Image 1: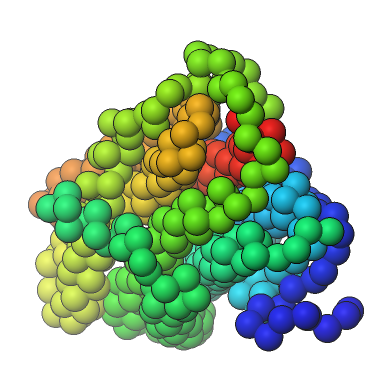
Image 2 (image 1 turned 180 degrees about the vertical axis):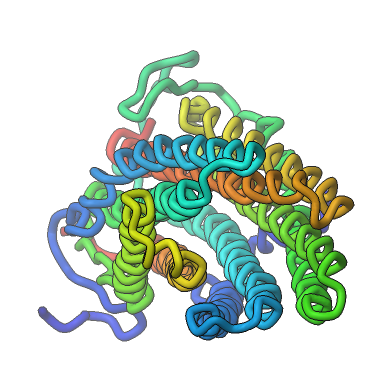
Length: 210
Length: 319
């Protein structure tokens, strides 16, 4: 990687506009499928909750109630994992638009294109997002396994249902908190992109073309 | 009040372009505080689960669970407030960028066209758009967003932290007065998740404010150059965003009413049944709000793409 030609921002020089980088291209592709997954998971989780509430109200089988108490949150949090992923991918897509659009403006003006390299906040955003998704999905898988065990008649799993529920709830919640912090970091990276663009735009008229 | 909020979202024209964003710094610091709260909640959950596994007393497990819930939900609320502050920083920097575009664009136009672009509606690469002689006025939804983001964020934070204090009270009552503790825990859940809903609505209104700033700023730039003002019409994603936001907020209000009811009937069959149902209901409401936020972000990407294409067109064709 060549050294940045300026001291205030870490940039890459080129003669043509750079397209979106890999995370930004992934964001452009995956934000909509993730949203679709979330939109399907949330109502399904809600339906399971209604079924469980019905069993509680009518004095239904306690093992079934316990199993649904795990499966319902599992499905609901598939939804949360998907919607947070969709938000993260949408933020990556916005960063890609800034990168590509900013380059195209400089290229059309006949100036050397300076493209901001990924700031530390963007790297932290990507890392935390991946960690958060894995943690939430770990909790979801745990809930699903315990729920399926109870539903299949496993007495040990039923006896420890409350313990597992408390533990997996804690895991899901820290995953959500990490995802929210990752989103904050992604938005902070957008501020960096805006600041750079505001500075770069003012430099363009004084620069020579080509 | 509209003028005060306007000063919060739009810096003065001579603002220092290179100045670092205080909103970003404060927002990230607040996000770290929220994460710390959530970590304490996780440790507490592990301890509570272990206590339950070892056959600990129900009121001991209940005590840990009561304040842990309040603290973790407050953690989410704190990070959401941080996200709101960072979004406010984005709005301000969009306007700083608008001033930079106004300053730079006249010196970048290769040659001025002698004729103007045709007026009326047209299909752009990014969807239907309009061409007008002057900058269009802000849409009602943008003006509403500009007014409502701050009250929503403020109310949300107050409710979340009021619920946190109540969760400590509930934790203290688990052993001595279980019925009162159950009632208080119902209020905690209802109040805190209404607060979470209001925070997400505040974030949604800030995203609407960003969209308004992109639209108004783009119009101002084109009008200042004496060019035909091309504006993207509201895409379908924006309309769906508004709908989902309203659905989510109404669901959160409904769950609050539900919890307010069961707080009056602790220990009854109704309490058990409704508790089973209200938890997923509140999560469904948050899911609707978050889905709306995804669509708002998609709309922002589309609007920015349109704006960059328009700037490039002005530079190359002068029209």
